[in-house]
Amino acid sequence: MSVKGQLAVLLNRLGLAWWIEVTTQSPKCIYYFGPFASSQEAKEDLPGYLEDLNHESAEGIQAVVKRCQPAELTIFDEPETLSSGRQRFSQQMP
Image (cartoon, rainbow, N blue to C red; front, side, top):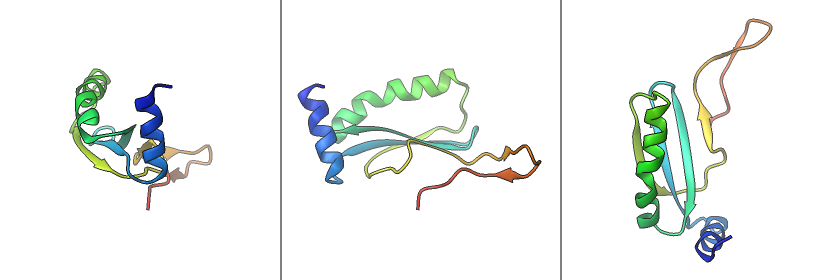
């Protein structure tokens, strides 16, 4: 792992790392990309993540760079049908 990567991991453990939070309306999801050692580093990588989501036909894409510690990297808020016919939603971050 690069020195920059090691620094980002350390900062993440301390709650000081930067993350890209991307929300999409269709599918209704929240994605987290990171950690990054600086907001500038995250902003430089942001276009690549947005391009990937556009290629996957995601709609209503919004992104923000912020300090956080996501518990999950992808949060789906779309109903899933279980074998019993009930619906469930993925666990959301508090």
